[in-house]
Length: 282
Image (cartoon, rainbow, N blue to C red; front, side, top):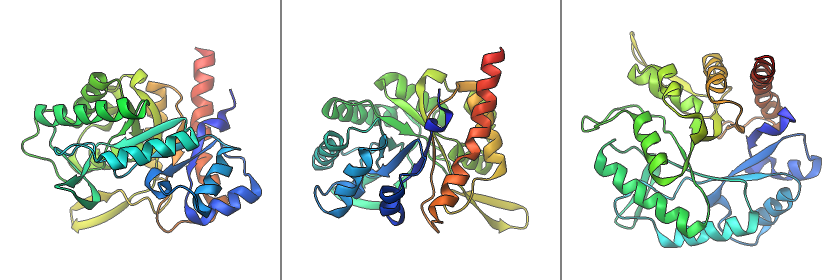
C-alpha cells in the first residue's frame, strides 16, 4: 500500500492552475460540489483535467439532508450530472440543514437528535442515494450549543442513521474534538462508539479558540490554520481504533501556499505509518 495515496487535500480555487501545471505528489483532491454545478467554463474544465490525473471526491454543503421539506430536486439533478462527469470515488454531505420553505440559509445548521429527526434525515438520505445511484458519506458536525429536546447522543444518532440508510460516515476528527471540548463530552468514547466498518473517510482541519470569559473558552471550526496538536493526537487514536482510511486536510480561509498545505497534510503519514507498522507486528 502506498500510504501517501491515503492523504488528500481540499482543492480550492487559488491552487487549481498550479495543480495542473505541477501535478504535485498528492493522493487525491476534494472539492465542494456546488462550486462545479455549472457545466462548461474554465473552472469545470480544469476540474475535469485534474480528474484525469488524480482521484477526486465531492463534498457537498447545500443538499440540506436535515430539512423537513425534503431535498431540492434541482440540486439533486445537478449533483448527479457532476457525479457522471467526474466519477468521484467518494460523495459526502453534512449532518445539517440549510433549506426551508424554498429559502436557503448560508450555514450548516444543527438539528435535534430525536426519533423524528432521524426519520426525516433517513428518508432524505435514502431518496438521495436512490436518485444518485451512489452511497453517501455523512459528516459529523461541529457544534456550540445542544438542543434540550435531543433524545440521544450525537454519535449514537449518526451511527443509527448510517445503519438505517446504509450510508457511511465521514468522520471529521477536528469536529469531534471541537464539539467534545465545547460540550464536555468524552472524545475517545465518541470515537469508540463508531463501528469501524461505517467510516469511509476522515477529515482534519484547524480550529480557533474564542474566550467568552476568564474561565470559559469556545472552540470554533474555522478551517483557517494548522491542525491543533491535540487533534493530531486524537487522529492517531482514531485510526488505531477504526483502521486506515482516506484522510483529507481541509483549509478554507486564510489559504496558504500549496506547498504549505502539502507539508501539513503529510503530518498524517507519521500516524498512518505507525498504525500500519503496529498492524504488521501484531
